[in-house]
Amino acid sequence: ANITVADVKCRCGKVVVTGGGGYFGFRLGRQLANEGFSVILLDLNKPPCDIPDGATFYQSDIRDYSSLYKVCEGVDCMFHTASYGMSGPEQLRKEQVESVNIGGTNNVINVCKERSIPRLVYTSTINVVFAGKPIVDGDEASVPYVPLDAHIDHYSRTKAIAEQMVIAANGGSLKGGGPLCTCILRPCGIYGPQERRHLHRVMMNVERRLFSFRFGDPRAQMNWVHVDNLVLAHRQAAEALTLKRSCVASGQAYFINDGVSVNLFEWLIMTFNLDDSVLRNTKNNKKEAINASSLPLQVRNIAVSHTFKIDKARRDLGYSPKPYSLADSVEQYLKSRPPCNTSSLFSLSRTSRQPRRLFLLLLMGFSVVILMICCVICQN
Image (cartoon, rainbow, N blue to C red; front, side, top):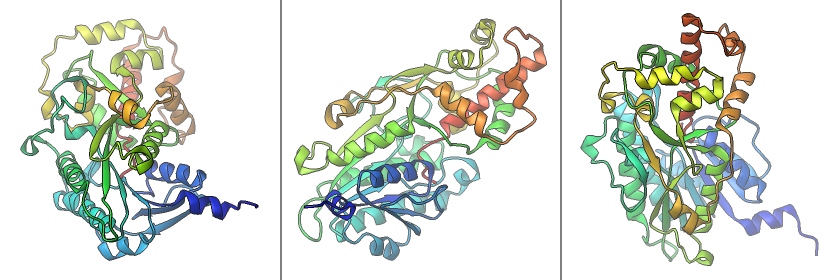
């Protein structure tokens, strides 16, 4: 018998991606649609690209329970990537951050129970365990939650609360019978093609705080995750919540990254062909350092070592990240962005040592790096 596209989609099932209009959520939904799933992209903001075949976009708010309940009929798996308050002025809107990240997550959990959706994959963040103190090769068993009163931003605190809500919901009873299986993915800084947000804000932060080199450890290591590796991890996590995989991921949390650690300053030299003396001068700088825990989230994330193992994700999910080049993604970004007055900075000769040019080059380099940090799962 002939197998139609509709037959394939029916067999693959129906999924919802909250935050499906954002950078990461849209790429996740697009990949699932390409694999034959019937995908509902749910977001307040419309996706940046055309809706792919097999997907439907609903412009709605996860805080609206009735609307969320309505679109989730017949759904097999919920990918909850939506959140609020990660960066910019929205960080200060405490009530809205709490209503989306906590209240919205509570709605997602309740809809899963009422609609008998058996699987929930929640996109969290490493900030639930990292608040400015160094972590080297941390794993899920050894790194505890940051105490809620120790978080310095509403986003991280509410994500930690929401994560614990999702874990607590694991094993809960579905209205149609059977248990709800949940799991958590904790990505680090996300990078990838076509991500262009936050550059203006990043440039201002760089100018105010970064060039003096008065903060943190120039040897600091951190992890990154390419958006396609993060999509892969979510797909595998959903599979690991099925009976076919013995629900091995049920009630579990996983750190997700590319499997490598990067030093900010060495990466800058490699990417922008700066003279090695820049790194030596940075590491030898004896200016008084400020407490990294008092820095804003984006700056703190490059000032202190925080690296995490992905052994558990490899073992339970079968996660094997593909190699991607952070430098290539930055180059693509620079080539695709609108022309600006600073574009000529990247044509400077390697041998150029004029202080003003070096300042501008470093300034732009830092801005791009922090831009990559801010590419977090397109929760907004």
